[in-house]
Image 1 (cartoon, one colour):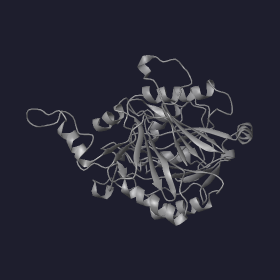
Image 2 (cartoon, one colour):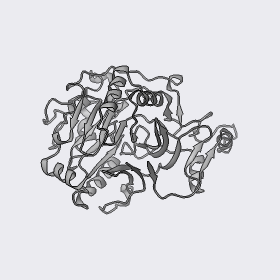
Image 3 (tube, one colour):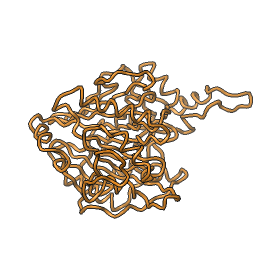
Image 4 (cartoon, helix red, strand yellow):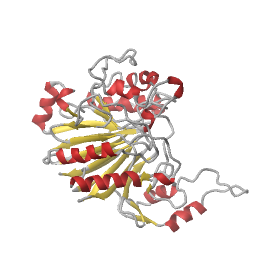
Length: 409
């Protein structure tokens, strides 16, 4: 059961006529051209069939670094005192966001990281986050090993908790000039055989993570987190081997604990250039039907903003599907079309496109930020923390959530 956070009353249903009217009202030049690209393209939906769009190349997966079924227990990366605090308090807190690699400027990844660190310095256990779950696009543009220092190790130099990850499309892309294979840098830094100082790490005390594969399951005392690698094609793509593994992991997950699915590409998105994917939606629907179980929460990235949808999934109603990809790639975020902003300003959230089941409950396309996830035995609380613009010289502080939703267990 999902409990929405306090939000303005109202419910907007956008028809295709509404969207056409929005496009007709865009500013035009005397030659009939729009002054800016339309963020709500013709026949817009919050998910599309990527096979009908220009494809990006599929990249074969690297060999697994661990043994099947590719699981890691939380006690292998946390100290005994932290794990004991989680078990005694019945509370697990962790960070999660994607699309952080600041290849253009470190300003915004460092701004987000600064306030993630405040969640440690301005709270006491058990409210300290236990780890950071990165949802992909750690390194731009093409997963180059040389960029792991400026885009990962240096920005998180003082982050005091373990960092685990699934790859994004940019982590799997190839830069021919490097001679590296797909995900070579990701595997060396996140799927190492042992926790060592990476050759890509110049000066940070952070050691490599020892995940068993690029898709894997994290077992914790309070929640099971299943991470899928959705490869490089726009709209994501999951091979049959990984699909069968995901079905098996859903079946094997502790029935007494909730399940969170993490995947880089979004299932739903209202950003026109990066909409959701019917391919991934079919993958998720079919897998849940085969396992007769569905995740309680779906966390994604890829789109550089924050969007929170609710939608039915298998036998669950109003499952939160959250896009959080404003982790610091650069200053410019992915801004939704004016038609969505108009509905939000008129207190008409949630927004639903006619004929589609998912609802856009809230969004933020102006502020970088991250998710703070709080899991107890009774509920999962998902908070989006919007961070101040670094140019305003904000003071260090514990930031209240811009948006939140509760999943009652």
